[in-house]
Image (cartoon, rainbow, N blue to C red; front, top):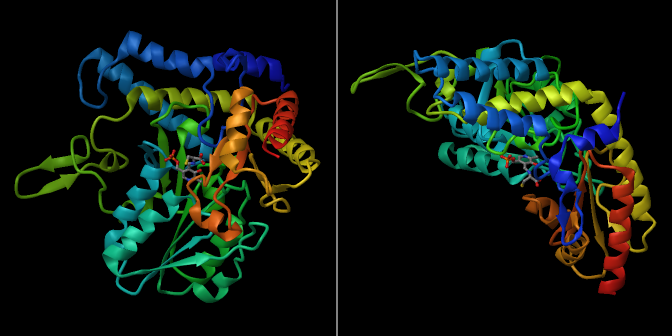
Length: 406
Ligand code: C6P
């Protein structure tokens, strides 16, 4: 049974006061709050078994190694990957995408094409621009309409033997639009031999993820947006694809044998995990996955969907308020502006005084803002612990901002 009070009781930060008011945290797309069990996992690691992993014969090192590898298997199950060595620990989505953009360097040639979409976060734009510059390849961008819906028909003519990679997000962080990734993957498989990378930063906190069913080659996501610690993330990649890639970082742990003349590399996943990893973060991420599984991913998705619908309905009752992507199928995010009144950050600052945390600005998606000819939006993003009462506080806060800025 889904009991919101029991869930909220697990998040100590929700008892904080901000500017003398109860905290209302609607900046979950930036980073979510952490349940006590995740915080405890961090404290427990440093209190009882802090040691480096995969290196020591001593007991603590083995305990830490086992705990981190248990976490890798939890994540494998969470996204239904076939093999645990297809789970690479990263610092977050950004690092996962950069890893792929570097590691496929030798598979991309002059004149090849990489396709992304208009709805991408800068993390899924810039690494591909850098790759295109290095290799003389071309970047193509799937257009969108005024509802933030991708016009994927272009793929019917764009996909061919020159296409090396298609990289799109499952959910847009700026608008919350859910993209038709199954159709994009199906078209890509039918018309090209390109790899497909899915940026799952904004879907993994909200949806059930099944990478085998999805049939993507890469799926990158951030642990800190799904109740895990900052500095954690995961890159899933198919085993047969990983085998073809260049290592990203060189260093300890990723070698088989190292001489001054030549180095041979370790097996998967360690070839792609050079250096001491974020051991305690990776362990605590496993705890976050347990939290989500115990609440139930479907329960999380249903609750957040209801919050989103309610927030949109109430916000749209405010005169001159525009929701971006209003008509699109969305998850987790409502992005809006009070048209003709102040700028997004003015609204955000007034909300902050009321204890309400939202993000304002371009959300690292400047092309989307340029499309709508705006500097930014006010973005409220939801997590499992948010309530309908909090949505009402937000709506009253926006009305107050409107009065103050008119
Ligand atoms: N979006 C937001 O407030 P990192 O920072 O590596 O954990 O995630 C990058 C990233 C990549 N793709 C998408 C779709 C994202 O939303 C993000 C992070 C945050 O919207 C911080 S800019």
